[in-house]
Amino acid sequence: MRLPKTGLATFILAVPLFANEARAADDCANAMDQTTMNECAGKSLAKADKKLNDAYKQIEGRLKDNAASKKLLVDAQRAWVAFRDAECKFQGGPPDMAGSMYPMVVAGCQEGVTDNRLRDFQGYLNCQEGDANCPVPAAQ
Image (cartoon, rainbow, N blue to C red; front, side):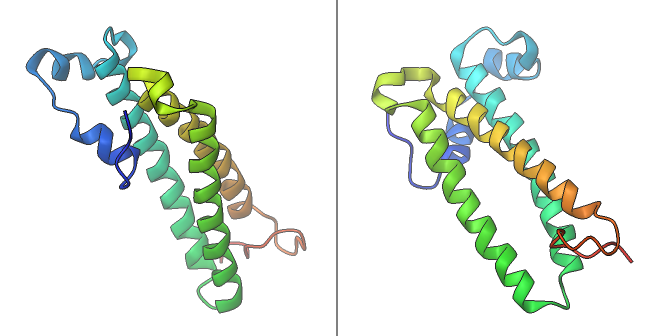
């Protein structure tokens, strides 16, 4: 199965849900079928991505008066997204070999890599004033 070019999130959200599967998705800890596990992995990734986006916006706000640093942030984030997606496709293996669990494996990988990036962002947001190794100014 090949994922659409729009990405994994679109694929996961496009999976048709039936009444029993929708109820099962409410309790991801007890998911019993692959469709539900794939959906739950997508939801978990979406939550991690939202946290990352919130931290990114905070960093952008602190860099609002520094166009050069803001451009570096944007460039770094674009490169990071490309890395995350490529790394997780690699970890997931060829989609035609992984079968129905491929979306879950890739989403799980993306969530883990996203959580690591969030920790980096949180470190930037909590730098001490005057820390020359921190690319983000302290909160005012």
